[in-house]
Amino acid sequence: MHRLLLLLALPLLAAAQKDAVQWPGWLGPNRDAQVSYFKVPDTWPDKLVKNWELEVGTGYGTPVVVDGAIYQHARQGEQEVLYRVDLATGKAAWRKAWKTAFKMGSGGDRHGKGPKSNPVVDDGRVFTMSINGTLRAWDAATGEALWRHVEAGNDTHPYWGTTTSPIVEDGKVIAHVGSCEKGALIAWDAATGKVVWRNDADPSCYSSPVVTTLEGVRQLVEWNHEAVVGVDLRSGKVLWRFPFPHRGNAQNIPTPVVHAGKILAGGEDRGMHCVVPSYRDKKWSVSSAWFNKEAATDHTTPVINGGRLFGLSQFGRGTFYCLNPISGKVIWQGPARTGANATFLSVLGHVLALTPDGTLRVLDATADSYKVVKSYQVAKDQTWAPPTLLPDGLLIKGERNLFRLSFSNK
Image (cartoon, rainbow, N blue to C red):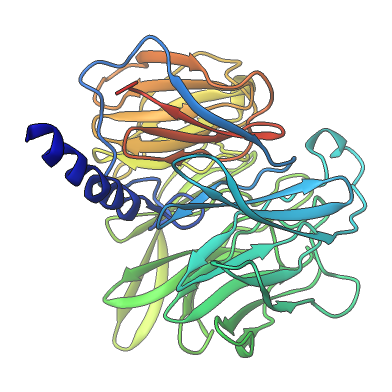
């Protein structure tokens, strides 16, 4: 009898787990690297269990998950590809491919021809941004191509290629297209591809936007080539602007972090700023609460955990840091030579940090000094693609392969 009840319950349990995993785009549902469904192990195991592995191609796109399906954007030869993969089994349901020409900028050869943007899934559609700046919409169930946008002219992507990740809000997919000289922030109707609004005020850059509510107003916050800005989601009008330009080799890459009504943005050789937008007497203004030159992030987007900010400074060839986001004071710094980049995931009491050499470190987010609880070698090759949180583990995209890892073999 007990065995029969267990067998009857298994499909319901599998369905519940399938629906629970929702990682629809860059840094999860809210672009803050957090989800409610991840269960921190009672004891972090000595090694991780590999559930399955699938070759998908090169590129830095994160594996996104919606309703039991993984969507992986990658490159194979001179084509970009999009896979739909079953989360439970690792079996590919379909594969779409399209030729994507891209001339690598001098000095960027080691990073390959992308894609470097992260896809996003919403309302039965997958949106991909190619390395050359072409936005495409696909049917999530069948892989049918729905529409695409190709920016006119030669200014279709920044020097190193397009890295910004589109975002979907209220039926609109939004992205900043163009180059470091000329660009536009555009909102398209997600269903039809029709342009809803277009703002040509600023050139593009490498950072990705985030949607948040500030002073009671829902808005898009982005860091473009010239400034950190708040944008009205209905019209595309800029509400406020904090100048923070890309000059020379000092590129604007990390996604701005929103915390307690403040915007935290840090750039290569330029430290970290805390920006405070305000709305008074029907007018927006913006001020700087603090500036910290020790927390100079290059590629890495920091995360909030337990009221603290965790990131990777470019100094010392890569140094983890933890600072107070209210005061801007550094709480601790880790050892030097950690790596050129890290992707952070925020879970209860811990921060998971994946570096390009395939090392996953579990950091104690409550400690007042740098403390590694556990360290895992999760890949033998480069891991610039951001990982994805599952209830009991992770999806990792290595140089060519996608694999599922678990913290438990149950």
